[in-house]
Image 1 (spheres, one colour):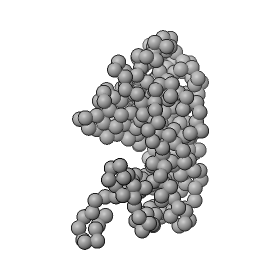
Image 2: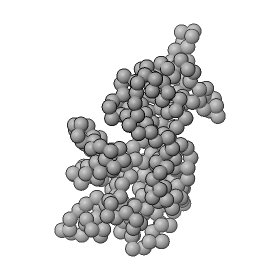
Image 3: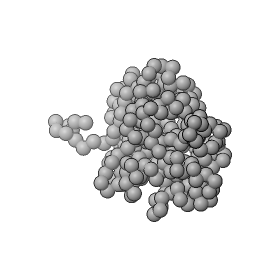
Image 4: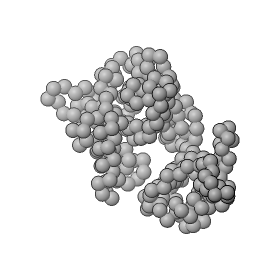
Length: 272
């Protein structure tokens, strides 16, 4: 952003606009010395981003920032397929011995799940992709592979970067044995990542438990294992591991809170 005097000004907010629009800071952060974007700046962003939004894109970010720009986009004719204004942002607890150990003690029969949490390997992409598609379709209402190979490439990239974590079973809720079938019982991705020597930040996305295993504790133990693994592999013991969830997803909220996740913010997503 340029200043009125021709030099560079301090950034007010940030936005990433490629088919979808991801926002931060439009509503201001006085606690960090950041003012809110003014009406003209928000209008300029809406005029820039509106024509670039794709048919199945979204507008997402902290709820107050999405609210700041959505009015301008609506005035330009952008229409919502679904509006999700309350998506709590939750942060995982910090535990000296890791999050997993406490929860395995409560469910010793699922120790095998905690031991099975690991990054997916490139040769397992064929197992991971169907699970990812099922999660995406259930969340957003359409098959992401119908529009071409882009989604598959993204899944492969996450795997190659060591950012897709899985638990495999034999397809019937038991540990994989030599010669037994293999299926994805649980998966979660590190969708966003910021590394820092003082402790990074990771946001989990694509959290999915196979439908036949839901309500049995598999998802809770596996997610606890993912939190510990992400701290080990990516953000450090003092790093933040977070996720966000729709406020109407009662089972997911109950699972996250049972692991000690606490709300630290509020996101919103407008699906186009």
